Image (cartoon, rainbow, N blue to C red; front, side):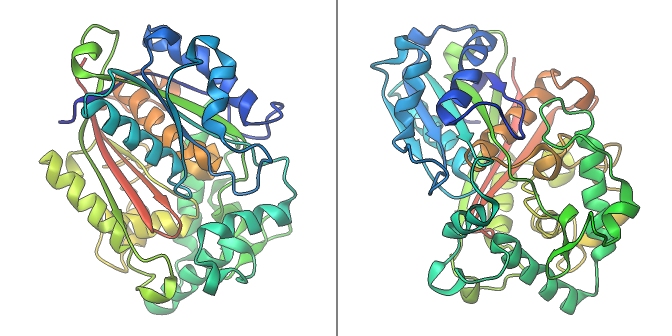
Length: 389
């Protein structure tokens, strides 16, 4: 078990926000996070900020924005992290390293992104910065094009699984109905998700619009404390294990149907926690595209290679299934403001374990898994969490 523990959090509603920029998104969630943790800004020893940016905002150097929301943080050390779609988890793990090295007792982990103010065509180009530009920058449809290629190759090898992807989309949208923070709170149902139409057209390869996560604005904060400090506060969610595993950036350098880095992260985290996948109460996983969630079923050990579709067909990952996956609605329903996503996933897991998830709550949730990845399974982060207070 690690020494750094989650003691509080806050989360904005994801979607098209009225807040004009990340500065205001961060300000929206800062005071509620401090209040939820039961601490003051003067208690914070370090600030760890995850913002992808890469062109979403002219303002960079965004770690320095947090103190503008509370002048008591003026002299608190702050640093910004970027690791593609795993930016938020990178900031979280950096904060945990800070606490576990003894350099501080309390840290803020802030994830934020403002995406909706950017024209759609530019969004695709900005996100392709997280691909191997030398080979992949001209892929049609941006990152959807990369995952469309993955889906097409998967179908060619293992058969057309479009209906399984539609089942994943329908599941996550149904779950998102219970999440007050979700961008898209609409239960589309399987038939709509499975049927190409003017409202659900093909976007890239076999992927339809309902197979793709949303362009969203949002922010989330985690408050971390060392175990001794956490014991004096209202709640404590501990990490049984946390593992990061990377893989080659170019798709050409690896088997794109095997998320090898994700597999290694999951195996390392479960081994470090002394658990099997079926010991978990739920998982929040990185469903940037439905095909990603399906292959992640295989990476986490729920199915052999090429058999991930059976997991959703058998109802294993539904909210009342053997292992609920994305009870929050996942990126598919909740939204995917890049820098906020990894922080948000850990907030959702902590809420479950603290019994504070409201209508999303999984009864008796005791152990939770979180998987967040940057790029097409390049930077892979896996956390196993449990409540200790």
